[in-house]
Picture 1 (spheres, each protein chain N blue to C red):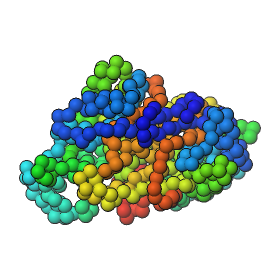
Picture 2 (cartoon, chains in turn blue, brown; picture 1 turned 120 degrees about the vertical axis):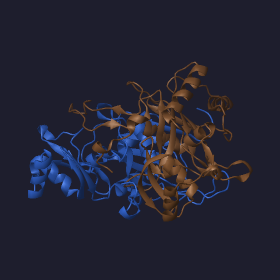
Picture 3 (cartoon, chains in turn orange, brown; picture 1 turned 135 degrees about the vertical axis):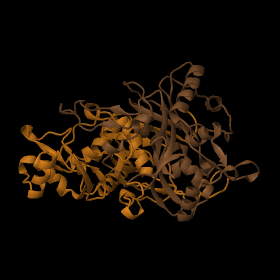
Length: 257
Length: 257
């Protein structure tokens, strides 16, 4: 389309199934090359949590997990595999809510999410072993490392977001959300900027990284149609980069929970 | 960019300040024409709540508002104009949380949002009178009416989303969210679709309209830079259209609040 302020979002075709130890920067560069694309300054590369976790070998074979008494008790209450519950508890600081087969947890990184992000979909172990995939240990750090490699090899400064899909309070439907970011401001503080009539704007801190994560989700899809990397082109920002850690809302300032 | 699954998002330049009674379809067509764009089948037109409310004359002059005793009491507690509090209460079914100068309300339409969407930014009354702007009476209906006019006049079937910015539980930062939709599925139920290894996906209802609303927010901006209409091109869907009313999550199934 023509005109200013156009944003383009493209799912990169042909990213293969990711294995532990894979070099995501190299896989992304190869996919870009196949699509005849070169990274440009200001591009945002959005990567699905799942392939970051796989590359970082965050898959755990369930037959290696010994459930604690607490995990066994909780697993009985909600009717879930006690080994999976053990992994969920090990990734979390507290149970926010429980229901049959589902735990809403506060993840150790502060995210409030189903099953602390421990996921058994789109993953299989060797010889059919049952496995579960955990979130990356440090998604902001993973984003920073990937950004450094992509930027260095392309010779331009790009940003990286790692996204996942979260349920939400008050609304049905899961949406893409940022769990890691590097090279862009996760939040943009608009407070005090003038409105159309010169009055200072109130309560306006934009969730920039989350809006990008949601936008990228539209082209990344899910399940067997999933394309785990998207390129977002056309954004600009004028404030320093920050990461997703600053997006966690402390309880004392949270009026929505 | 090249390749399949590309999404383009463009803020339409030159939408004028909207007045009560303005024909939004005509304003949008004029902006499209100036940008040398014609609507195509499957385009999604995202319109900011603010201009829908203005066109529908949802601005209220504060000197016409008589606060109830309850509004006066609440206004004293939180330090806010009792006339604005009266409007907020009149738009709401309950107070979710209160804090100095801020009320988190359950809007009569089911949205949980700051001040029930009653907004004093980017609006001025005649001769400097103080005014506040309410949400459209029926945003899904407003979206349907605008969609009918745009589609009929363009001769192609387009979709419309009305978006606003909401704060959220657990996360800092406001993001674009759909308050009205027509011509597309607000939610897409992916449950039971196979994952990469043939296992049925769990808990996967995508918040499609909200992801589009967030994506459009990235180009629409805020304050004096605000561009209140965005065109989203390149999406596709295969399930029937539904509206935003179905996105309201009943308390009984909400584990995130």
